Image (cartoon, rainbow, N blue to C red; front, side, top):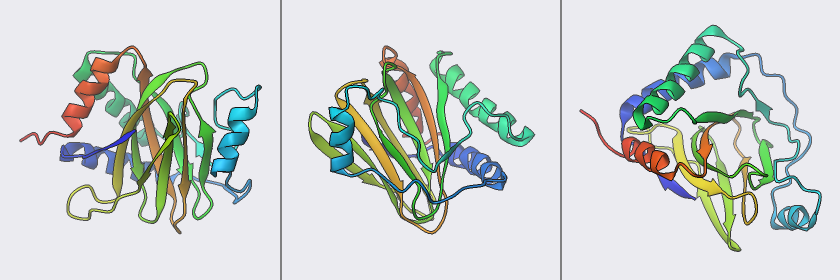
Length: 205
């Protein structure tokens, strides 16, 4: 997993509009169940022979595939449509579109289950939060960024979940909601991922 520098400001503009629509939705949430994202929780997942590799229930709200408002539906469809066109690949999908609650929001450890995938995650948080990633026993931690003059409160990260040896979890520690838009694609399409990331990291005049 690594952080991607968003230099294409059109992406920020479009994400801002999607996030505004997203945060207007009538979210009904609670603080429980409390976070389980520690190293001990990861070991419990890895030792569980019945663990599917998908995240266990948390207090997040996931709106992927839900047409909850006209603007939100149109803008998210337009965004993913432009990514498909850019990479000439129709296999991209919204894996998750998460409202992570203030202070106790979390996503449990997961490895992609039987669906290995590349992910490009756009995270909006005006407070404190982070993403944990484990590969070959080595931990990578990326904290949510705040750059008022450039990417505002957006952080972009990318990586691969192989359904076995890689694990990811994340937390919201701040007093504001944390929004996660996860665009994913099958693991065989690494060239499409590379193309999309290059676009994100390039300033287009």
